[in-house]
Length: 526
Image (cartoon, rainbow, N blue to C red; front, side):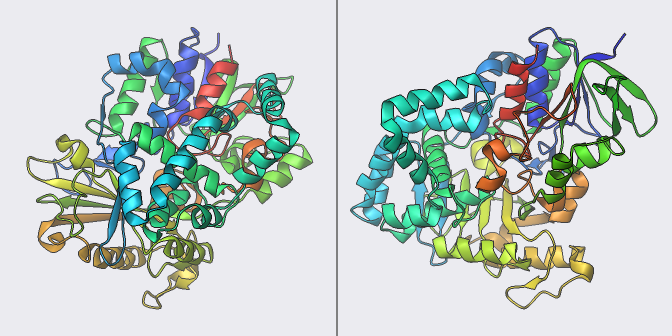
C-alpha cells in the first residue's frame, strides 16, 4: 500500500495550494519539506527583538487574493484562521528630494494625484486602465492558464475572431513593449514613471526587458483593485491555515524530510521518493516537485537517463538577480519627511525610471548598486499586532542584489573572496541603505532598536531553491517564460518521467504568491 496518493516535494505556496486542491478531490497528499519549518518563502520569526514579528521573505498577498486558487479555497482557509489586513494606500514612491506620489485603491484620488503631477497623466492613467480592463480576461488567461491545452487554443481562437489577425498581432506587439518605452510614451511626469518603474523588479524583470510594460499594467490594475494585503499575525498564519486544511483532508506536512531522489518503477514512472536518511516513501499516483530545475533534474533524477534536450535546457537555465532583505524593529512609527505615507503598504525609494534602470544594470553586471531601489514595507501600518503597542517594524527588500559580487558601483565596499557574500559585505551594504533611509525618515536613528539583514547567500541557505538568492525561480525574460518555462521542451507541468510533475516559481505561470502552478496541477490531476 502506498504512503500517499501524491507526494509533494517542497512546501511553498504552490505546494500548499496543490495539496489543498488535490485534497478536495479525496487524494491523500504528503508534503515533504527539507527545512525544519514549512512554508518555503513564507516565514515569520522574531528575528530582531522578542515581540516583533517579521516576515523574513515574502509578505504581500495581492496576487493570492486575486487568484483562482484563493477563489477556490478562501472559505476553507478562513475556517482555519486565515485573515488579511488591508490599507487603501498600497504603494508609493519617494525620490531623493522627498517628493512623493501615492497610488490608492480609489480611482478618483489616483486620477487627481496623477493630474497634479502632469495634467495629461490623469487621463492617460484612466485610458490605460480602461484598455487593460478590456484585455484583462485574455491577459490573465495567458498568464494563469494551462498554455498547452484546448482551452487556451480556444481562447486564442476567440480573440482572433474578435480582433482579426492584424488586431491580435497588434496586441502581441504592444504586450512586448519594455517598461521604459511604455512609461516614456504614456506618461509625461517623472513622478508617475518613478511610481511604476520599480514594480518590474518584483516580476524578475528590468525596465528594458521585453513585455515588462505589460506587467506594469497588470500590477497597476491589481494594486488599485485589491491593494497590498498582508496576513494578520504574519505570513506563517497562511501556512498554518493551509496545514489545518490539509490535515482536515487527511493529508500531512512532514518537515526535516530531505528528499535525495525520485524513485522509478520498472516501467520508468515515478513511484515515490527516497530521503537522505534512506527512508523510501511510496506514491500511488505521482510525485510533484516544487523545486528549482537543478534540484529536480540534477539531484532527484541524478543517474537517471534523460533526453538530450532536457539535459541541455537544464544546463542553460538562467537565474536572475539576487534579493536582499533587511528588517528593523522600531520603538515608534517612522516619521516620513514626505507627507501622506503613514498608511502606505509598500514604498519604493528611487531616483526614478533611470535610477531603477541603472541599479538593475549594475546588479546584472555583478556590482553592488551605488543607489539601489529600496522597497520599504510597513507591516505595522496594516497590522499593529506585529509589534508591541506603539512600536513598529519595517520590511525591506532590495531586488537588485548581485548573486556573485564583482565589485561595488560606488567604489566603497571591498569585494570578498571569489565574489561571495560575506557578513562584512552584507552589513556594509545595509549601512548604505541606512544612509538612504535617514534622508527620508526624520526619526530613523532614534527609532531603530535593531537591524537584521539577509544577503542573497543567506536566503539561499534558508531555501535551497533560491539559487544565488534569486526569489523568482529563474530569470523571467520572455525567452524563459510562458511556454518556454522552465525548459524549452516543457509541456504544462509534466516532465519526461511519467507521473513526475514540476511546479513552483520556476514553472508557468512563474513567481509570486498567486499559487498559479499549484492550482493548475491541482485541477489537472485526479
